[in-house]
Image (cartoon, rainbow, N blue to C red):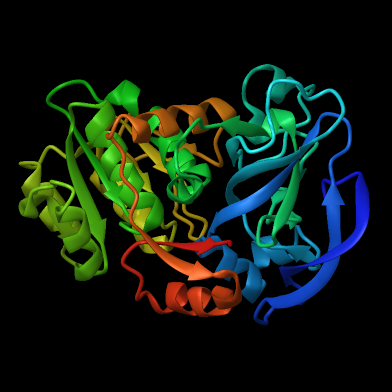
Length: 359
């Protein structure tokens, strides 16, 4: 499935998921051409994401919602290669980043500024978007509606690509925590991977809360320590995690926590450690569940399931990056090294965001 309304007659290579339970495949597809209100982007960089691996494996949530046969890549950035009819505010050569989601612009959610919940572009619980059911950016060219591209001036598209999903999603989830985070409060990030890396930075930039980080990997915790989080606030996710968090907060518990993992264990940890009138924000989609009821969660505590981001979130996180308040560390791979990059992502050997760089 493609956003393009026309094709040029030329072809290009694309990296697609063609069957559940297998690696991605290089295929030959038509080179797209922009229709009215669209732009053609020459891809400069496409970030890879842990959720891509879930799609390749055909996890139940994706298998039930999507049909294989689309180009991967939902963290996309490049330069304008051609303008469709009616697009007058961009020029060929302008650098842009692509909003990660699709939006109709007319449903109740879109008109209320909640386009990440667009009624038209979803299948079950999954938003259908570029690289997730619709052709994404792991190809030399990508067509998108003008309304779903953000001009970034002279910024380097390669460094901004990961912000279009990981950065913007983390920003959206942190915004949901901020009402609970006045000075003197505490917050925690569970999962110090790609989203958690940004979540930690954003919490520190946007709130005055003391930030704790929980992860199973000592290596990832060490990387977070480099962001300025005190060693005493780094908690290994083991059987003592709850005890250590309670001790670190002097028995008070947490005012807000974001779970970027979403397993049975991490959800239960959220319930056990969040204090009265606190907030739990769940982003991770690892299929975990938890029992709720009186006594299972602190009184007045609420739970928010956060998915995706808005166009304004993307603009805001790009602005924070331009101001030096959010940094990105990447590992570059060529278009011919996509599978190698996914293998490194799966093995957990990356020390930054995997980014496919185009010539």
